[in-house]
Every structure is written in structure tokens, then in C-alpha cells.
Length: 561
Image (tube, rainbow, N blue to C red; front, side, top):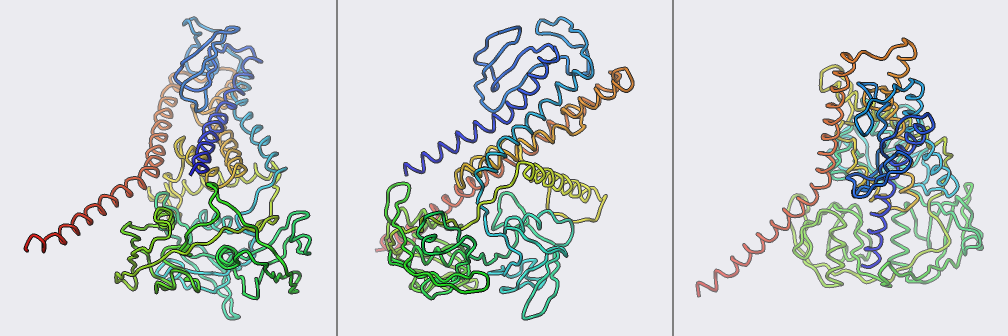
């Protein structure tokens, strides 16, 4: 419990600092460039809603009580209207080149900051979510899904996506599907045959109930590759980087879940024998010792049902699920009277009841059934000195290129989505404007990247944010930095500023659009945060009502007597 609390505090601190710093570094660029070019700076603020200030060298330095970012007041940058200082006195008109330099410095500092953090990631490396895959074998697929209706089945091997071979992680593969415009085309191998499965992706509410994205309705088999650290027991036994684990104690390991299940529930701390595949040869290594480990709260073990998804995609032999009579495809509806949505709810009930036999209600073939289930206690073991995902070391430039590509694909998808709603195109995409994030959504993703991931994953998201902040601000749109750059450039060419009667209505129009856009994305950000809370409250109220009704029914015979 204490460990989780500290992790949450650390994740919040990371979110607040880096979210604010991305904006602060942007404004610092404007500030330093403006001072260098001799422009008048009224104020530089860290945070919003001033609680402290001091004037030094003609500039008021402020600290605000809202710690998300900051701002800098440079009246001579604005080309619309007369520039006035803090006392309302007119300021000399700034040269277009000076304005352009002061404006471009903000996005430039964001990009430079991204390269600095990108260098840290390049040096430290980041673990892949899965090994890179050139083929994907379907482990499970939901019936009646678009993929299933198009002909994809369990055991099929996907070797092409949209007519091209791939060499990417599972998340990379999913990303390619999400940004596909039109039909997704999968090249599939089955029983020696090759054919194509085409379908229009649909929103997967089970995987992304709040975000509403078209996550695939199938899951892959993820092979287990070993990357032993130097001088670790696996390295001393002779296991090498990239060896694929195919058997443990003579039992097949088809995917990561098989190995983690065996390590946690079956090894019992005894020595294990690994069989690996290397260059087409099977090699056996004996005496692999698991290491006892404690969780963040110091517990040496815990209670489990051996349930990894709901509905059940697998029922392990000898597990509490099997002993209770549950089968593949069953969906857990409630446990100990608590409604179950996902495995996190199951974990919460088991942690609270600590091994107590529980009443489980489950759905099978559309019918509700009930039985008892008893969690099993297992000690925690891990395999030290080995990584199960290769560390990748993308260069800062590669990270920058990736952000450019992802930004372009996102804007293209949103453009197609808007065009389709306006009947301007027949092209199909599941990307919509509501999938964009404002400050609330960005803060949420920063928090979850650290809380559920790691600091390095958080830094990767910060790199994405600061690069995006720099690039999007360079778009030639009035009120953005890119719009100011265009105006200054036109003034250099035509040797006169843009007429106020043209500039003012354009600026006001884009200010309204920008505010409307921020309200739009903030609405969906809040909705994504609030929906799970509202649903949880409604389910608790329903459960309370059901319990009261049950008590009333039981009480009636007593009253009759």
C-alpha cells in the first residue's frame, strides 16, 4: 500500500514538472530571443495566476499558483494594433526580422529540448513492448468482430499489412491499423494457403471504452526472447541475447503468458530446465534458479485465480478456475457480490478477501450460472538478470522523424474524418477530432505512463509532447507562432504590415476557433476521466439496490410467520 502511494506521488510530480516544463521552455525561447533582439518584455511568468512577482531590469518576473507552464508578454511581437508597454505608452515598432526571430525561438527551444531528452533515451535505451515481429500468429479472436466476419481465425499467421511486409512490435502493428485510411488488408497464411482478409476497422469498446479507438479484436501469440545481462546466471549457463524460449521443463512455451504463468504458479522455487531455439537449433540449459521476491508492500506472496482476461481466453490446468468448473469463453459477472468489469476488479476483490472462498456468478452461452471458487496462495518468484524485451536505442533524429510522421498521420486522419462528415469524401477512418488531447488529457497520459510504466516511458512521452508543441506552433495559422512568422515574412516582402481591417477579423475568427477547439478537446478529456468514475458509482448503487431487494425478499417469510 505504501509503495503504491509513493508511486502515485512520484507519477503526479513527474506529470506536473514535465508538463509545465515543456511550456516553460517554449516561453523561455521567446524571452531570450526577444531580449537578444532588443524587444520590450513586460513579464515572464512561471505558472499562472500570480502570487509573487519582482521587477528586475525592467522585466516583471512572476510565479503563479497554477504550476502548468508559463508565459511571456512581448507586446511588439503582435502585428495587430499599436504595441503598448505596461504603462500604456506606445512602443517603437519592431522590425519584422526581430519579430520573426523572437517568435520562432519558442518552437525551436521545444525541439532542442526534445533532442536533449531524446539523447537520454538514446543512451539509456527503452524496452520494446514486444519483440519485433515479421509474422503474427492469431492467439484469439472475438466472434462477430469485423476481422472474424472477414474470415480471420485463431491460428492464422498474418505476414502482410496493407500489401506490405512488416517488422515491428505489436503496438507498432496496431498503430499501422489505426492510421489506415479505408479498408485494412491482412495477408494471411493458413494450412499452406495464402489469401487476403479485408475489413473496415471498428471501435473496440472492450479495450478502449473511453477513448473509442479501433483496437483490433484479435490478440497475437507473443514469442518469448531472452536477453541475459552480463554475468547473470543465464549468461553463465550459455544463453545468449535473442535466444527464443520454447520449453521449460519439457513444456511448450508458445507466448509470454505461458512462461509468466509457469514461473509464478508452477516452479515453486525449484531449478528449471530451459530449451531455447538459436539459429534453427534447439539447445537445453539446466539449473535455472528462480529468485524469491517481495512486492512493493513487502509481501512474499499473494492469492490468485490465475485469470488474465474476462471473458476467459484460457483456463490453466489445476487452476482455481478449472477446479470451480469454469471454461474458456465464460465471462465473470460478479465475485463475492461485486460486479466485475475487468481483471483489475477481480484483483481488488481477492486482495480484500485474502483467500476466502468466493461466490462467483458467470455467463456461459447467454445463461447466468453460479459456483464457488477459492483463490490459491503462491509465493512470488522472478528470474533475475534477464530482460524479456530487447532495449532499443532510437537516435534523437529517429525520434523526431517518428513524431513528424505520427503528427502528419493524425492530422490526415482527422481531416478525412471531418471531410466525411461534411460529405466531401467517401474515404473511411476511425480517427476523429475527439481523439485529440488537451492539457487535461496530456496530463493524464503523462501520469499513467509513469505509474503503469516507467520513468523512461514517461520521458518518451515528454519527447513526443515537446516535439509536437514545437511543430504544431509552427503551423501558419493566425494566433499561433507560425502565423506571426508568416505575417513578418509578408511584411519583409511587401515592405508594409498587413492592413488592420483585414488582419483583425481574421485574428478574432481564429481566436474563437482556437478557444472552441480547446473547449472541445477538454470536454472529451474530462469525459474520458469521468466516465469510469460515473460507471463505478452507478454499479455500486445498483449493487446496493440488489442487496436491499435481496434482504427484503428474505425478510418476507419471517414477517408472514
